[in-house]
Length: 484
Image (cartoon, rainbow, N blue to C red):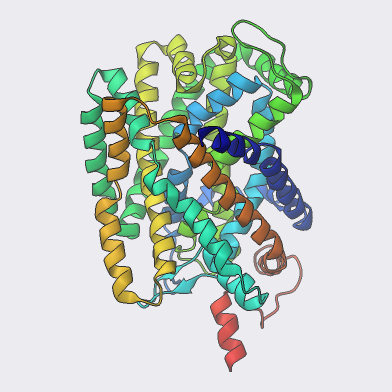
């Protein structure tokens, strides 16, 4: 069983998924007129540029503010993979993997824009009038109702099952317990228990509570980590040009064996860079659009800009800091990998403070990831039980009080019986790849809807083209107009 799962996981996370992500990214980039490049200034101005401004949102339907939504989503995607995952990509593929990580992220900025925009457009209100959306929603409305595809439910079920499987197979608590416990010489069971308590404190307020916490915690978390990394980069500024030269050169030539590094062919460099980017920023995975769909916004593309910003923060900023620190310090060829490699790179420049920074980074990143994924699962459950209010409320209550427990169980198993087997990791890889395949195919099919929304946005806010007063900005509005 383990061998079969390993082969399937290796195949899915190999060329098929990489090709699908790259193809969809290029398709939307060309179709949008290179929107994420041509309008990068506009994207940053209307996201980062308003982060610290008070904006009026009266009359806009939604649960979270756009900033709370993106903070929760960034918290869900910026995780331990940004620290250990990037290090593994460089350890296996060499410095050139960083370049392909950037390429995939630039394409991912638009893929995430598409996902988020469609999730907001097709979102539905529950019995309380609160909007929820995501891939299962645009499968139902976009594929089922608009396209007449009767088997949309099967796709939605497979997608949801793949996402929800990580509820039972999650190693966030274990990773945090290992990093913090090892750094401060504290029992993993104690760290894991504290982690559970903090997760409960985050989720008991529901999605609105998560949004408020993430809105405060995530910016501090990212600034803290980026500042520490920039300190090391500035400290080694003389080596920066040669580090960039190594990244760009080895991206197209591969990397020869040096030190403890075994060497990598160009194909391996590309695969590791793209796969790590996708796994880190989740562009195409269909996860963060679920939380973005709850945002208070008057245009789907407006929230889509925050989706692009999310990828920018996750990969172009946070992942790049990890990569540059590893390359610029020369630790990439040490033979180490994972979080140990990142830890060694930081520690080599700023001593024991570096170890503490990484441990705290893993703790904060893990906590916000756990919080973000709580919101994803809740929205899937809300869609599944949307017709049965009583059953939905019961299931959500049970879910809220049991959510942190599987993660702690992993810590207990790790301490008492050793690490979970490779089967767990392989199963997790398979169940994350399948939803991504389904989601990117669906957004490709629904691309005409996205391009109509983008055309309307350009006319309204960029002065490109004429505004069509009869155009419906949300699917529910379109249905209401058709019913009249």
